[in-house]
Image (cartoon, rainbow, N blue to C red; front, side, top):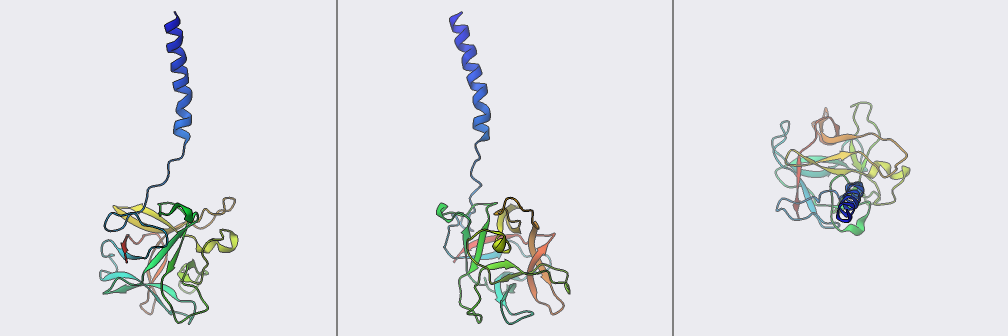
Length: 207
């Protein structure tokens, strides 16, 4: 009788513990580079297409360009080389590594012709002529708030590689635009990063 009661008590305890174990949020998967090593905060990387994009078979990297205005510079796709190096700064930089689905800032590690503008990515104002949201620079690192909501991007797993998305969650009480970061060719032939239905499939190469 005593052994039966002990067995029943153990079963109840086991069942009660299941929600606690299942309720613990596991950390999101760590992002890795082309060599399978962890992508780390503040280290330099190139963002490169993991396979040629169907619209831009020679696309090889990301760079900065003056498109519709002198400053700030916009993020564009380039041919023939791996573009400019960048760093990633997650909303909690103390973690040291970059994980999927985490809000982060992206910053080019370079000097530009716009010394008063930062090289931190941000979503530009809606372009009515092209009917697009373009990715430009001039953002700030950190300080998550409504004032900086356009500066936050995420990395997500995609088709054996990764994709970039704009889907900020740093301000929990607000709903914001949530779309893939892909490619758009304007009437002048500029290949610009923009919010699109089809994402740009990318990998990260340590610089």
